[in-house]
Image (tube, rainbow, N blue to C red; front, side, top):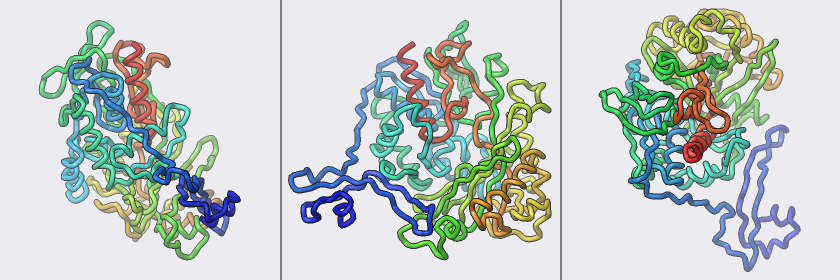
Length: 499
């Protein structure tokens, strides 16, 4: 109140309440500041207002309305389902994986026994990859759609109001499952359908139009509008499209490693302090560096987080990261990845549209071989990595299946390895202390985005060959995170209504 009175020139005695509308941290200088945008309420104002009143979305009962098949129950698919309820369409969501709670048993087996269930893992199942990969809601995609509305829908389904305030909102992997279950309940309560362990194995075509899909038990689900929101790891869908001569394209993506530092070290670097104070959250970082003609950058940074095994099939190793809502784990991890272009997949060019996908698969298979043919991840200390020196001993890691000492030159493509060696040293010029053998490099971080793009018309959002088929979200190459995928789900449903 004192600061608000001073900044506004309002007598502190007349200030009855101060609401925070926006909050961010400025750590550019030795004195770390909270930047706040506030609302001041005085006598006569409605003191019940928070300044962040939730815009509650109204839904229709759609039980007897025209159906829209939605393949995938990740952010794009679930928000497409909610948009159907708004616009009077009946969503029929088909998800190959299990419910958010049933997935936990398979994740436990993956972590403890190294057993990969190809249909239920960190990528497949209710909520998609976003469920167990942190719940970051920051996006630069504000021109694509209404970010505020997406956040309000999440609050309406149980997220804390803080996501409306923070400059870099975050829900946390431990909080997301309940929110996702609440979204599913809304879809079912208003007449939609959600089917789990229902894998789509074929598209039913009538000439150049889609008429439905076939699922793994041989049954058919019929509708003339199908939203394809399968995520970036549904390789079988890419193969199915390719086999049916439905056009897909190879897409550039980024590939690299997941780096883990002690969180206390990142706090010292970012906050210019010996010990982080009680009022500051675990520090994050964002680094970008041009190395030759390639960008190298941090990706999905998880302060106070954990590295997770995200393979979707046997004989591959994949890493990703997540944080609990309190971000209170002793490690900070981040993907550090190198931009790749179509020229880098030339060795696989005879595979056409699947060239980038096969490039990605080969790297993940090499990691499995080098890591001991299990879900143990190949690892190397950071300074040793730049010297191509085998690390005789490794620091502790949050990666539960374990880390196998390795020379990551045996795993990573040469261009990625060389770029990272240079970038790690250059990052240290921006974050003094980042380049250290206390940091552990895990390989690979390979699922940054889809290696395939499913084309669609810019106006109708339909596939150019197949009427009624709407490629959507990360898997189709049109989003990169929870919020942007959710926005794309909304857009595809709006397109269904206008065609």
